[in-house]
Length: 316
Ligand code: ADP
Ligand code: MG
Image 1 (cartoon, protein in one colour):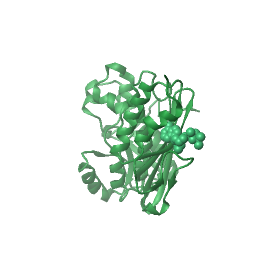
Image 2 (cartoon, rainbow, N blue to C red; image 1 turned 60 degrees about the vertical axis):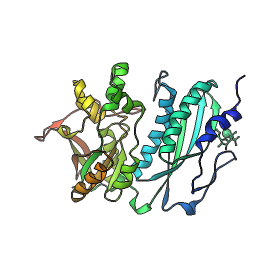
Image 3 (cartoon, rainbow, N blue to C red; image 1 turned 90 degrees about the horizontal axis):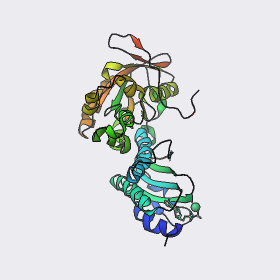
Image 4 (cartoon, rainbow, N blue to C red; image 1 turned 90 degrees about the vertical axis):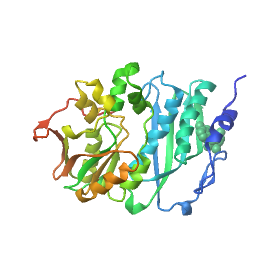
């Protein structure tokens, strides 16, 4: 016998709730209750939707979808320098497929536990497969990394490596496992964001591609930026594929879920050392300039043109 909506909530979603100091009342009532006084700074709130056929293929394992639905949201908190606290999950399911929900909750739940996040509520409806996750975090307001603080002379730095997810999407089942993980199981750079907020003038997480997202940050800051193509960090498995459009994948591929931060030059050595303690690379890839727009150039300064500059759901 098929289980109903309410037992679905009790069996699968309630185990993802956990006691956290900031939450007075979690899942199960008409609304959750947060304790604003338990937050040390500002509440950071963000939401992101994944839609089958748009953000993930129907063939994607449910656990990967659950992981990614939370990961892309935690990445937004990371980009603010916030500590994740709680999440809400609005889920639309075509059928009540318990095996799928079990997998989804495994992926979502493992990532939530590893970041101390409690699932405090949500909604479950019938419809095309999609999910909207809302996350709540805590960040000291003066240190919250906005997109708007970049200053000419700052160095543009990125965490980790670029292009892996875009290459995995291109290669499909032929992709090396490490590349596949980067596409389906991105690691939100939460700890990195919390360390970087001490020094960063501005930050953004890389979902649409470096050039597009850096473009958002430079526009919000009223500055320009130059990115050096020869400095973009690549993983060993990315390099091994030797794709002929490697630069496009790295600069505009999207789905990286790394952080891009603008740092005063004198703070870069400390920031690099701090992230090294997490086992994470921080690489200088360019510089913030006066003027407007993001340029991609070679080591000798020649400006490069990419046909495709990043992902947009509504291009034009
Ligand atoms: P309402 O009718 O008030 O919208 P629901 O029946 O939708 O309440 O939900 C009952 C409880 O279960 C609520 O506390 C809600 O937050 C929670 N809930 C429903 N769906 C989910 C879900 N997908 N994830 C987490 N909590 C959920
Ligand atoms: Mg409801």
